[in-house]
Length: 194
Image (cartoon, rainbow, N blue to C red; front, top):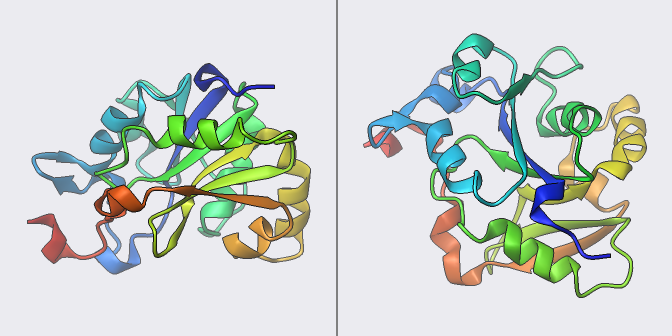
C-alpha cells in the first residue's frame, strides 16, 4: 500500500521548556522577522494533509495560526515522545510526521523522500522513517504510523523517555538527506537568532 501525503498530519513540537533559551517558548521566538513556528508551518504545509501544533503553554497564541492545538496528556514537560503520543491519539490520518518548532530550514521535500523510501518496502506497518543528514540521525524528524500508539504508550508507562530506545523496538528506516545537511539546523542559543 503506498502512502499518500494527504494521509499524513504534521506534528510541530512546541511543547518544551526552552531551557537553553532562558525558558522562552521556542516556537514564538523571532527569527528573521517572524516566529520560528511560522517558518516551520510555511515549509511543511504543502507537504502534508493536515497540521497540529503540540504546545504546553501559550496555546492561544499558537491557535492564531488556525491549526489544532494539542497539549501533552502527561504533565511536567516529558519530552518529544509525550507529544508524539498525544498527537497519535488525536489525528485523523494514518501517519504523523514529527518536526521540532525550532528548525526553520526544514527540507521542502522531507515528506516526499520519506514516502518514497517507505514505498520501496513490502510491509511498512512497523516502520518508522527518520531523516539522516549523512552524519547524524535526526530523530525528531520522523514519519510514524499512528498504529504504533499502543507500543508508545506502553513504553512511556514504564517511565522511558528516550526516542532512540523506542525506535529500536521497531523497524527503523533511515532517509538520506546528506545533500541538505543545513536543513536540520535548529535554534538553541540567543546568538543564533541574529
